[in-house]
Length: 204
Image: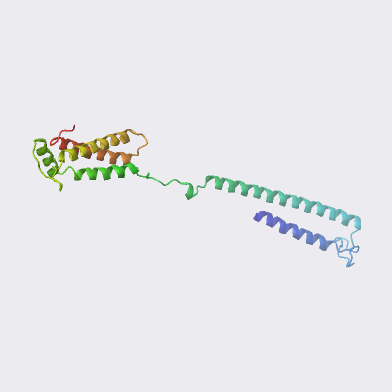
């Protein structure tokens, strides 16, 4: 672009020189500015016209050259801009997510196993074993015996549901690695609790 500007300046200077040289006897101001430097006499109109024609052709050639340079630089600028926009990557297009949403079933199973633990305390399991031997361990307010065996077996069934659910999630290819680790932990807890309770009350 700077080269084009320089050419434009040169072209303007050429026009000024042509205009100044044309102030001869035939010019409107009649100052006789177009003088032959060898003879000291005014140049004839034919010679002056030929010189002006040459200057006009030279000016036209310079104008064409300026236009070509400007057009080439414009094309180069568009190509560079296109390449730059193609190579650049917007930060918004970059996927930075590294975690997945936690499976909501995990929360439900964790809450359920916490509830089961409350009914499989040692005192509950021991009372159920004694009841299996025919002993009445405790009575309700209405005088009927407390059925600890029934409560323990309900808890055992809940543990089996947790175990089966955890196994299905572990076999599901859609389960993330993080969730699989959590389901594996739930499976281990439920299995251990079930084995421990069956030492007091066999599962029916």
